[in-house]
Figure (tube, rainbow, N blue to C red):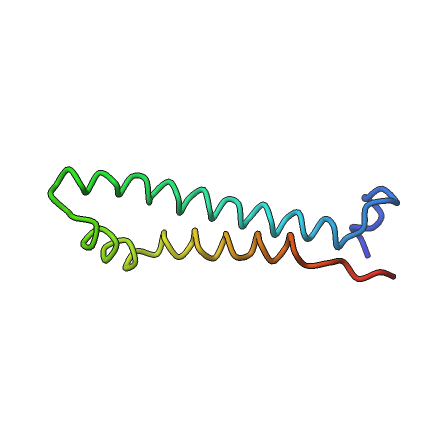
Length: 83
């Protein structure tokens, strides 16, 4: 494979792919959580906690955070296959 030529011998492609997946999941979590904090401003407009949560669960940013969090957990728990 072309990438194996550029990688050091000790780093396997699976480790690199895991790092890329975890980085993308981290970006999704940061993006989603930042919008959750921005939406806290809705309390100043008179929203209560029930209305805030209903609004939050209808936004895709919340699901980005949730998916990013779950992918991070799965990547951390999953063990590498030994060759």
